[in-house]
Image 1 (cartoon, one colour):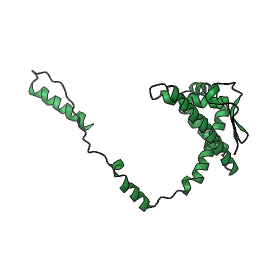
Image 2 (cartoon, helix red, strand yellow; image 1 turned 90 degrees about the vertical axis):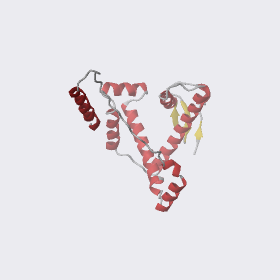
Image 3 (cartoon, helix red, strand yellow; image 1 turned 30 degrees about the horizontal axis):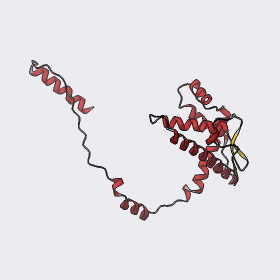
Image 4 (cartoon, helix red, strand yellow; image 1 turned 180 degrees about the horizontal axis):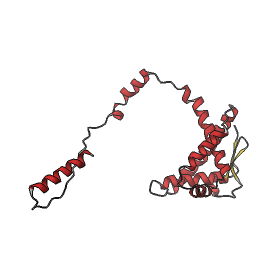
Length: 198
């Protein structure tokens, strides 16, 4: 395995989009890929309602950089093991992604903001599916957990499986004028019972 850095993304900030920030076994991780992943990570962080501070941003950038290298290593390993993803599978995943958007225009705008073409997105899907298949074949399918191990885990983590008693109560109050007669009060009670059933 060979990893080389063309420039440290932690120190230099954004470079030309055609530049590379690292090479993994002679495959470039481009500045454009790096910038896109940092942007996505910052959006996820902002989804929590705040922007990252300086130390958090530095940690986020470092994590993105390491994730890109790890993903490239996993993809290369998937190719070394002969994992192939059918074109029809890639197209199906692409179409599912498009359906998350109410209109084609919104989807195209989202791709554009991420500096992705249709071809680039399909390549990303292909790479992600190959990595997923590698992990499934090499790790998930080989993991076996016996009933005895499951019980032992459950017994040693009882607190995680306990739920406190819960009570659900609801009241539906129907306003009735103080001077209402018995028929009006009965109608309000009947309406209240109807709401409780639904």
